[in-house]
Image 1 (cartoon, rainbow, N blue to C red):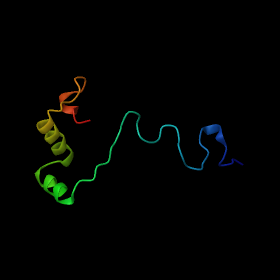
Image 2: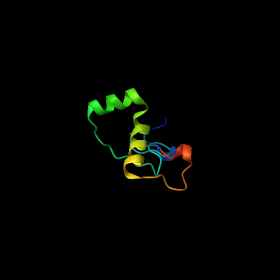
Image 3: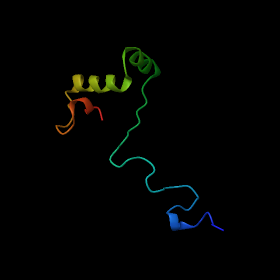
Length: 75
């Protein structure tokens, strides 16, 4: 009979980190809480993420790194 704690398949059956699962390396997030009224207004205009990116580029002159594709500059 196979025991669920058998580690021969690389999984202990108890949850936690597993190979091939979870966040991809190199992706960093920094949560920022914005006021609900601002999020509502941005949602009415367009995609909130793109609106924030465009606003930062326009206000602060921030440009994506040269190695980013123009259509993927928001990643």
